[in-house]
Amino acid sequence: MSENILEKVGYYLKNYNDFLIVGHKDPDGDAIGSSLALYKALSEFGKNAIVANTSKISDLYFFLDDTKNIKLLQNNERAQVIITVDSADFERTNLDKNYIKDKILINIDHHPTNTYFGNINYVMSQASAVGCLIYEILKFNDIPISSKTAEYLYLSILTDTGSFRYSSTSSNAFRIAAELISLGVKPWKIAYNIYESKKLTTLKLMGQAINTITTHYNNKLTIMYITQNMYKDSNTTADDTEGFVNIARSVRGCEVGALLREDKPNYIKVSLRSKDEVDVSKIALTFGGGGHKNAAGFELTGSIEEIKEKLVQAFSFLK
Amino acid sequence: MSENILEKVGYYLKNYNDFLIVGHKDPDGDAIGSSLALYKALSEFGKNAIVANTSKISDLYFFLDDTKNIKLLQNNERAQVIITVDSADFERTNLDKNYIKDKILINIDHHPTNTYFGNINYVMSQASAVGCLIYEILKFNDIPISSKTAEYLYLSILTDTGSFRYSSTSSNAFRIAAELISLGVKPWKIAYNIYESKKLTTLKLMGQAINTITTHYNNKLTIMYITQNMYKDSNTTADDTEGFVNIARSVRGCEVGALLREDKPNYIKVSLRSKDEVDVSKIALTFGGGGHKNAAGFELTGSIEEIKEKLVQAFSFLK
Image 1 (cartoon, one colour):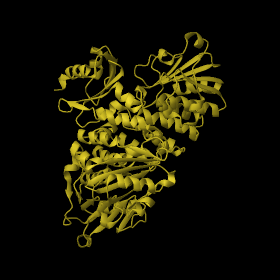
Image 2 (image 1 turned 180 degrees about the vertical axis):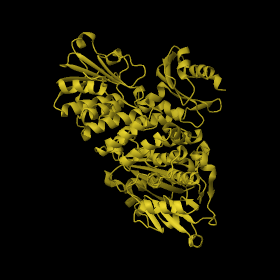
Image 3 (image 1 turned 90 degrees about the vertical axis):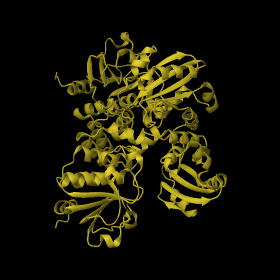
Image 4 (image 1 turned 45 degrees about the vertical axis):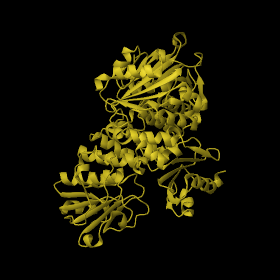
């Protein structure tokens, strides 16, 4: 068999019939978009494909036709080939070792920390989204990309680049997006469902959270918080705070944005985001947490005010 | 001379030496980006180029090197060729009829309402941004695009497509963006200066405004307001409310979002935005205002509560 990875993956897609496509726990737009794209393309190519995750998907994605076809992973699905998408390690997929042992496992991912756990691994850390990799696979192997498949690929790229904003946004991501538009994707339809379709309750919580913002060290550190009472007042839960930490970071001059959530009484979940050079994972580590350079977090018992004070201390190097 | 419009524009760019590039009043990212791109490319091509507007530019754009070179339009600049960008009619440019009469006027625009007021008119209503048209002109005529010129073109496309979201986002806009990234543009650098660099005072006003949101007709109409007191409390002005009406529209199920600003005591400026089918310009017209299908506005004397009531009445067809 060829050493070309695109050809290799294509060999399995063409010569086998039963596929299980698996994303990761709490799937994001990239996991959902890239697994649905593969599901759609394989189904339309005449294959039996099942798409499954270990957790329910957010109602944010219900506007996509095929979200109703995403199943809860049972580890007993009929499959010859299992394809995992956007999962850096085997644990993240929640697949059972016994279930997979007589099957072919294809691992498609773009995390630099990927552990190459598959029989075949198509891992490209420079890819803006797994959707870009699925696009390359389909294109190289002449598997048709319908307008629906294109829509799912587009969702993957749109969400994982933060609407083409993050530094991971490559020239290639734009080039693929151009192709997907030609195939019938309507950018506004996807964008407004993802970015302009907020629950009123979520928006009200956001308004309240914004009013808690304080800045420290000449705006370099920005802290925003959410209390138990604010959840109650606005009829929301922690699930509704997706993206809120980015609001803290969006203050002019800010280098680190922090969100403190009182998810349980006297129990605070802290999310940290930095814009450029500051490595927030180092700070998170000192509090027993972890993460990446620009996105990290930790959890602590205490009051909002106590944790805030500790945080201001910890970032005193921004002075 | 050739009938090819790109060649025609190129003829003047290559054979003349003194250029004045003019945007429009209260220039947006497209006017600023496309005029700076043309300014930079012509300057680097060995020409004398001046870029001018009739009003000062927002400090949002000060992160771009060449904003310091944008002058206030005097209508006495030395120029053989005047190029207007992103201006639908002559009035919008604030050029003086006497000043331009012995000069060549090139009109580059993408508004469907453009009046073809130039000696040469490169008007393409299907273009996502004027930046796309400038790119085509430079490319076709082999005028080099440096990384700085690319950055300005990218700003134009990014802002006029709302970060590649609006329905005007074409396949071609993505293709050009891909090229610009190859030329050295860093998407995150531009995006964070445009979208993640808010004044804290603006953010606080936003928080207050969000808390005023009411929805009507089963969320189809969303109304948000800003009072004189809110401006005072947050130390902001009307200039700081850019994009706020989009927050009103971002409520799930919303078809029309409205922002009511009490810019003077008892004097309300109303902005309307619709998502799809509702033509808000028709409603604006009945109040003596105007605009486009998805974006319109008007001004009225009265209290916030009075105008709100009138607005709810006017949109009763959403019931």
